[in-house]
Length: 166
Image 1: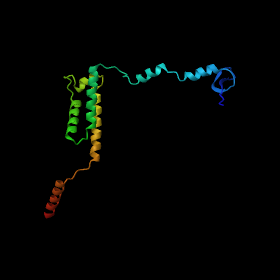
Image 2: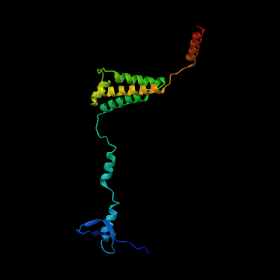
Image 3: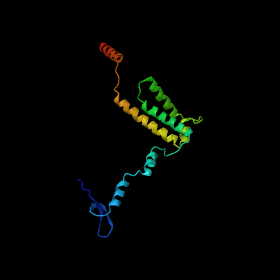
Image 4: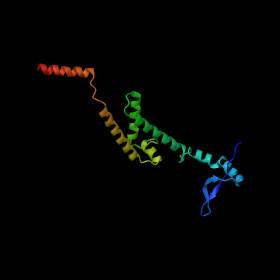
C-alpha cells in the first residue's frame, strides 16, 4: 500500500506564508493538486519569446539587405583570401581589395555608397580593414622563411665559385 504524503505551507513568525513546503496530514489537498498541475500547463508567452529570438532586431528594406550582403561578401572575400596561393582566390582578394579601397562614389554599389546607405562610416571601415590587412601581411611575412629554390642555390654556388677563382 502506497501512502501519499500531504504538504502545506508553514506559517512564519509574522504570519506570512513560507516558500517552503512541509509535511502535513490535513487539509489543502485540492489547492495542492491545482498547484501541482499548474506546472504542466502550457505557457502562452513561451512560443512568442522563442520565436522572437529568430526575428530580426532591425528591419531593412530589400535594397538595403542586398547592399549589406554585398558588403559582407566583400569583407569575407578580403579576409579569407588574403594569404591564398590559388589564382582564383587571389583574384577574389584583389577584387575585394580594389572595391574597398576605391573612393569613387559615383555608382550605386560603390563601397562609399553602400556604407552611406547602411549608415556606416566608409573611411573608418576602410581604415580598419587596411590596418587589419597590414597586420596580417606582416604576420605572414614573419612566418614564411625566405624561399631558396634549386636555381637560387645554383646561382649562389656559381657566385661563390667565381669569388674563389678571383
